[in-house]
Each structure stands twice: as structure tokens, then as C-alpha cells.
Image (cartoon, rainbow over all chains, first blue to last red; front, side, top):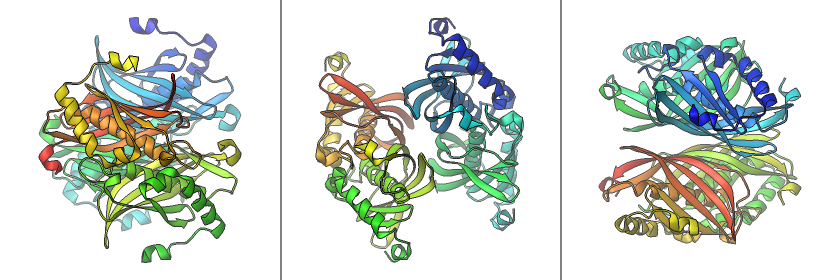
Length: 152
Length: 152
Length: 152
Length: 152
């Protein structure tokens, strides 16, 4: 929290645009995920852990972990582009490196390189229990930028 | 359907074990996914498309597409191991190659190589609209086998 | 061999263009790799095993295995595009699933989907010893098509 | 250089062990690569650019870029394990994000998490031209630890 308050925020217009897009992602609402921080080239998404997002051992399912990581990376990219742009995930790779547990998960998407066509993001997901953060997944994502008209 | 009926089924004991594990995956139930076919080294999972699983353009979210692909691969691996085994996803990579749409998605996980410790699966997801099948995602997954006691 | 002779060949013009490009890849010559088959959307590259391509245990190094896989995928994509196109590797993921050994390795790149901008290939590498083929690596690759003028 | 001198070095015994293993990698010598820094959980490998490592446009081939990245990650992992351990690459994923050019490439492998069985590394490759560094590739690697006797 404290750490995040020190991180730069994206322009209000950008934040508004990204929150509106996030609200259109039915899956994020259904999972109970929420946008936690929108910085330039960096977005945090939080997912409270509950039985609706688990795998068979009670940890958060790799698919839910990946879903918030993927959205965090996509919105991190979107912060860097004009209002008439959209980004789509081309592919991503993710390592699940520890059981995903805690009060909530926090996914952080960070742009490593933003290109005219392709953007590369780092994806990290932490399990958060009180003040404890544990890295539970790390990945890398490729996105393609398209103009919004083509996306409809 | 016809095609699947011609595919071999796993032993009833294996099917029972996998259905029980699937039912413990809170995420699969929450997304509305269901096991469609359990063959030796090959599992199909179906996800009806509805607004709860979408991204911002109304297509199925990469996270939901990945979630059923990841589970299909994990259970495909599990069909090949003794009853006291569990598998965990080490990592996967997935390309989203077309907008994920249709009446439902069908994820197919197929074991490429089952090892004592590590198993590699191919992951494919189709968008199905009536008789039309379109490949919407393709990936590759690494799993690790552990004994069930260690997983608890 | 017999199998390959039954596989379709690309147009002679395409084969000539791809052989010329391959000959400009200094790495392929330096490793001792050669083009073995050029079909539409499918290219085979052979790498004789010798000490110059090994890792510390005497097997073929993952880097050499990957190099021929990457080139096979790139040329498989190139067979499908007009003469003024080039393709560049965006990314790939590869699993090394068995020790890479034998008289030679054979990498096969197969186009899964060719798009206007992005193309996805499957990459497979076999270790070949006489009549024995063993799958030693399997991967997935994303390529971007650019016009040749821009690539210079 | 200056930066690297400030980075911690691994124990002399570890450095000796890793240099001996590197010298057994026929591919590294054949490509002209050399170990540049061996720190705990972090290894740098340098590859001078020359025609023997190029692709068709004169840039360093993705396979050569990947080869040094893969070795850097593998040796970074090895620095953290006892002398009777070996590591093998399970899989890696790499994005080629800019044309690989410069006087030489420098690959840096960094351990993100070292486990009893599996270790995850970040892979980064820079193109270096004088004082200029440009990120040309970034990836993620999974390694498996085995005891040395089993590797022979």
C-alpha cells in the first residue's frame, strides 16, 4: 500500500479509460478481481482468495492466477497508447512457482518494451497474507496493438 | 461428438477419480466448465460462453480460455498415473490465435510425454458454434507429478 | 526419407528463395545444419551431431537444438508468403524432453496458423539414429511478417 | 564492466567448477562465447558478433542469442547447488525484442527461485556497442536439478 502510493499514477484520463475497459471484462467481475493501481506501464490487479477461484487442493487455480496476470499486463500496455488503441494478448507464458495462497493475490503487469505493433510485459503474481508477500507466479506476455475500430 | 465417441475412454476408476478432483476445483464450477471426455492421456473440457467469462470486447477472456486448457492438460496427465499421484502445473505457454467465440469452447489436453517427474502436454482450445470448430488457442504445458500425501 | 518423399514440396521458386535465405544464415552453416525438406508450411532442417554442438554431457546443446527449430519454423512460415516478405521470430518456447542424441537431429517447423501479421508454428526436433526417431524437443513459435524492404 | 566488478562473485570453488563445465560445452567454444561473470545465482556470458552466428539479415541468429541465454541461466542455477549436482534445461521461452547487434551480446541469467527439484531463471540478452547497451531478448527458463551421477 505504502509502496504503491509512492508509485506514479497514470493520467486521470488514462485511468478512467482503463477502469471502463476493466468493468467490461465480465470475467474479472465474476472472479471478484479489482484494479488496484494504474501507473504508466504498470498495473496491479487484486484477487481475493475464495472457494470460487480454487483448484483441487484449495489453492488459487492457475487459470485464475493467469487471468489476473494477463489482464494486468494488457492494461499496463494500454496505459502507454492513445485513446483509440486496443491491445490483445498474442501469447503468454507463466511459471507457477509456489502454491497460490493468502488473503488475496496481487498481479503486477509491467511493460518491458512497448513497440508500434508488439508490446512485451513481465507478469508477476504475489500471494499476500497481511504484511507477507510471496511470489507465486512469474511470466512474460506478448501483446498486439490494434486500433479500437478494428476491435469491434 | 461422433468423433469423441470413437475415442477411447479411460478406465472407469480413473474417470471417477478425475471427476472427483474436477468437482473440487472451485474455479471450474464457478466458470461453468464441465468435463466432456476422459481418455487415456487426453481430456476434453467444455466451457459455455456467457458474459461471466468475457474480456472487454465480449470474447472469452484469455484467462478463462487458459483455465480450461490448463485443467484439461493436468487431468490428461493424471489419467496416466497411479491413484496416489497428483500433478501440479509447473508452467504453460499459450497463444491466443483467434477471438474466442461460439456457443462454447472446448479445451483438449493431450500428453506428449509422460515422465517419472515431468509430463509435457499439448493444449488446444476450439470455439464451437454448431458443427463449426475453430482453433482459438494452442499451447504447451509442463507438469510435475507428486505423491498425493505431499500435496495436502 | 521415404516419408519425406511422400510429403508435398513447395514450388521451385519458393524453394530457391528459401535456400538462398538459409545460405545467408551464418549460424546454420557454422553449426553444420542443412535444409532437408521444404514443403508448403512445413520445413525440415537436419543437424549432424558432433562435438561442436554439444553441452557439458555430450548431448546436443539446447541452444543448437533451438536454433534449428527456430529456423525450421521461420522458413515454414516463409513458404506461405509472397517473395517480397520476410519473417522475424517474435518469441518461442521450447521443452527439451529427452537428451538430444543420435547421428543427427531433425527439426520440423509446421505452420499452425498463418496470419496477415502474425504466424504461429509448431516446432519439433527428433534425434535420429539409423531408423530410430526419438522426440527430443517440442515448442511453439510466434513470427511476424514484414516486407523485405523494411528488413534491410 | 565497472558495474560487474561491483557485483558479488561466487566462491572460487564454484567458479572453478562452472568454468570446467562451460569448457566442456562444445557449442559455447564453437560459437566463440565466454563466461564473463559468475556470481551467486547470476551468470553473464559474452558472445562476440561475427558472421558465424548470424541469421539472414546479418543480425545475431535467435538460436545463438538463445544458446548463450540458456547457458547463462543454467550456470546461474548451478552456482546455488552442491558440487555433486547438475542442472538440465526443462524448457524456456524467449522474446526477441530488437535486432541483436553490436560488438558483442551479453546474456545474463538470474535465478528467480531455486527449488529442491525445479529452478526458475530470468534470461536477458543485451547488444553492447561501446558504452551502449540495448535489451535484445528477454526470457524465462525452467531447470531441473539432478545428481551428477545420474547425468552421466
